[in-house]
Image 1 (cartoon, rainbow, N blue to C red):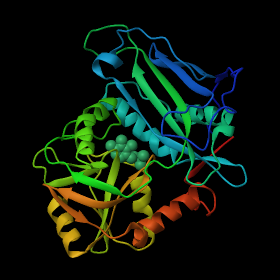
Image 2 (tube, protein in one colour):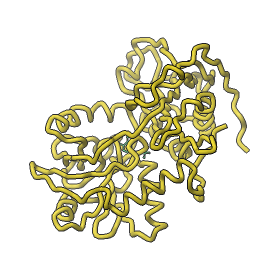
Image 3 (cartoon, rainbow, N blue to C red):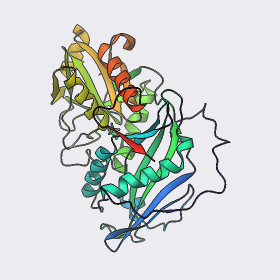
Length: 355
Ligand SMILES: *Cc1c(COP(=O)(O)O)cnc(C)c1O
């Protein structure tokens, strides 16, 4: 049995729940009533507490602002028909959280703090977990350096926080994507496998340029040759080619996605051959031309399964089949949803019960 941590709880005296429009939830704009905060100092995590959501005071010299010692996680809590609230596979995020921490010379966080901090906020804010289909409470744990010191050296103090907000579907349409062959997201030896804040800042210019060209997302390619497909925006790129599920191997440059891992596990159970390997742009385009590419999607917690409608490279656009007719991604999405929302038996033990 894991010990129950001592988390101090201060409840809000003014809930914003009643004034929140649950029919209009643009991603990341609405926050629930409470948040979790803990401080790292003298080599340990302390002051574990849940407090009302709100602004925090910080020195303008913190290393997180100047040198990017900052990273995050993203998970979702789902409401079942019987009122139960569960978080999907948070143990996986706990492991990845610490991989990110180590890459950025930041302290790791004990798994119990990671799990119980989220559970504490979500339980207190369980009325904020939407019950509508395709809706969830998005959970954002993050850590950042707080030393008020401009020296380029790892901070000695940090904050770990969790904020949450109700969300609806992330993408409402089939995506028009572009294969990026100039900019890179991650290089070997870099920090692509970490959910580091800096990775997202550097992706903004290429993403904006792609948007200006009319694309919804871009598919990153390897930094060396731009020959191999890596990720799709902030989701893992997955393809069904010639009856096999293929996706890039989760090494240096690839974020080891929980959704990716879950899709792979389900595919294997269904007897589908899975290949995690280098996936070349050439074979994807060839597959799109011959029709052997029967499915292409981004996999991630925020986006779930985001279908790709067309792939463009070097000014040429290749259209794929109507997503509604795609057997694999439709089945994967339906299965995932059934498990997350408690309509199917959770035979894998993926749902973490809150409260
Ligand atoms: C978060 C993220 C993913 C998806 O990971 P999940 O654990 O499935 O949410 C994939 N790629 C990048 C770059 C990400 O930031």
